[in-house]
Image (tube, rainbow, N blue to C red; front, side):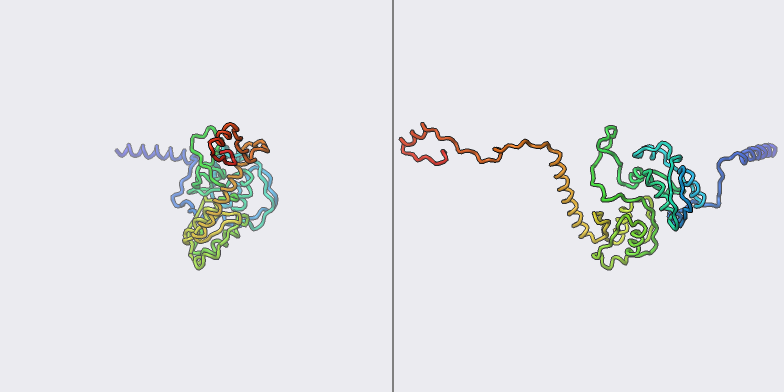
Length: 307
């Protein structure tokens, strides 16, 4: 028995020695994966681009990954199904201008926006994917064309938002609603966010939590609901207001959209040929003189219109 154990130990040691030289995976029992809040903090770090960059995407992304100490992976399938499709997103040429004191998230947006892409937070890494796939995974349903003949799923037409909402990642810790809205408005100035005066003292509601991989409009909706309010996207930007006021704004939007739809239907109808007699009044019925004479003989009055 002891001889068998000794032989097994030697064999294990030899195999382990070979594996130590060639093993592609190294386990770290003391480390732990990053939490979503920590990933949000890393994307919020300040960075600098000292000179313009013009080269493949994978080089600049690997530089960011090394400095952040995180793993960044690509969703090749999502980019191949993007519009326009990218067969090899890693080697795609990207450009960056000189940038100082900007968030790492801003650098990713500057890199990926021209490619129709975005950065997502996964359990233990950052994931570069297309916006189309990100919106689908965020709960907006399949982004499909109503003219796609190969699609077997039911496509429900919905009115698009007034502006494209970026995919964002946020962490709030005991901030008031007003402070939270101000932070989002400062971080994404191209997406106006307003806090209606109707909210009253609810603007002091504390907001805490981590929201990742969501369109900015959905983030506004989540923080509004946390304060017992509602958010409406209209032509003036995202407005956080009371539920009653939000319902009124929704009704106004629906009526406006209905008028737009009716106008589009009228434009799509074929033009009717003009007929100058189409709306003219009808001529009175011609009098039958034989019938008139018979009526006279029978001493019956005849109406002026011939009835």
